[in-house]
Image 1 (cartoon, rainbow, N blue to C red):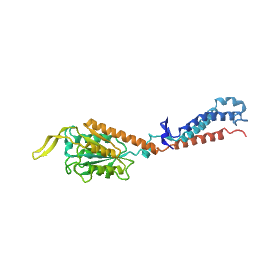
Image 2: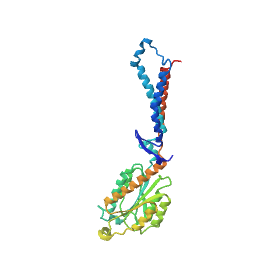
Image 3: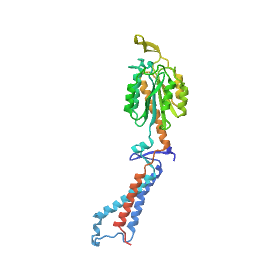
Image 4: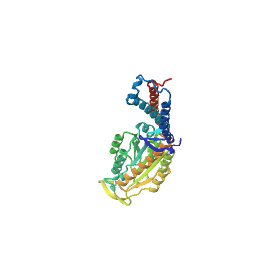
Length: 344
């Protein structure tokens, strides 16, 4: 069945993949009326224990309500079976969410080189990037998220996990200068790609954030991007920093001082890397624009998951309608046969 034919007809928060069957509900009252007319015209109608002189009181006896109950059970049972034929789907239930809304595997690969201490972001680029990354994590639910850091080399600070509190604590502890200096963009991406295993979720994403040119590493950025493409990973690249001159800390024999430095980001390279995998490149000029970029990535990946779920078709949930419908039908017919048995 082509799931794109799903009509958003809501009934008790259900949607239906075969809504044309719901037209059969119009036949239910007609069938009940015809059945009533047939019973009304039959000979001898019903057996009762009361004497003939008391038959006029039937209209006020429990028999009237019993007849109404029988028709309610039969009509309700038929209606529920028709609803089951329409293939109901409840996309908001936790059961369905576990079955087909599996989330995304995400690796955030962050440049933590000394240039990330530049103060064009407050208090600096690195702390701003860490803060916005944690805000992004707070907005996730079922995704597995990991964290890779790189300077002249790279390492996995936290493998993909749903333990977001531990992940955010790990991000808080990251600081610049713990590994060899430099900017190894290819190594940072390659390490992230290696962390997205073959058993990863259907949608795999790397968000790579850097503020400089690639000047270190044994693997080139484009080679790492090609590896990501071959593994079905979407790469989003973010260039961080204002254009022009910024104040940046520099280590000297007399300690660390702030010096004015020209910002150099190879935007053409970052854009080519992202587009080769079906992703996009973004430039963040301040913390708010960085937040907006993460929001854009979130929206794009959410839409991909929606499309993927539609292609996979969420599981139908007719079993409760079938069970209750059959119960109603059997109860109605059995009650009619046992308590309102017609004369032979």
